[in-house]
Image (cartoon, rainbow, N blue to C red):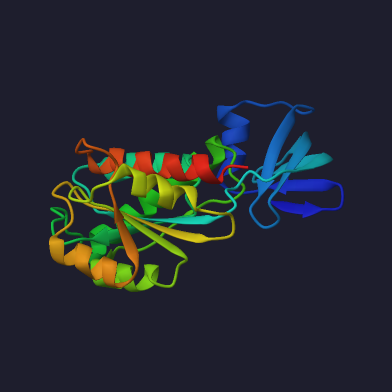
Amino acid sequence: MNVNDKSVIILGSDVNHIKNVLRMKIGEEIVVRSGQDNREYRCGIAAFEENRVLCELRFVKEEGVELPSKVYLFQSLPKADKMELIIQKAVELGVYQVIPVEAKRCVVKLDDKKARVKLARWQNIAEAAAKQSKRAIIPRIAEPIGFDEAVKLAADMDVGLIPYELAKGMDRTREIIGKLRGGQSIAVFIGPEGGFDEAEIAKASERAIQPITLGKRILRTETAGFTLLSWIMYQLEE
């Protein structure tokens, strides 16, 4: 998208979506978001060209659609296609970035070729989810990293949380979530189907990443992430 004075030019894959999928007509209003300035542009379609859509800017709506904190989801690689659902819903819930993690008990192991293919697919899913939920940014899906590297990366963030089935005390979880504030960087670690290894929890704790409980029931890896991200969104949403 290019914005110039009173005109907006739409390029790329959105052109085909507007012309051939939505079948929009000249004069119809379209909503365009810019990840650069966090603005929503309301435009009227002025003309269709082969590789672009020309629009006239009607007004700019400024609103805080993003969470006031950057939430990083360190998601252990799950089996099958679960990662696609996890990314889609995490983006809808406001996550800033998703970092796939190769934890000890992960069944899935990606070589470089598989990782490149998966990453491209995951990024497309993130983009579609961001547009559907009217996000101001498209969260980036990082390349998969090992658990040790993930812990080092998260150690520089303001808050680190790691749900663990042996952690106890919902009161403590409520207290930690209740202290979250806008402007913080928040790391959320979610384990694979087999859960985190005790040694991984120890490494995370050494870096001030706090083990917490999500309740008395054992949650699937995708459910655990949705649960914690929902709590964080509830706490931070203005």
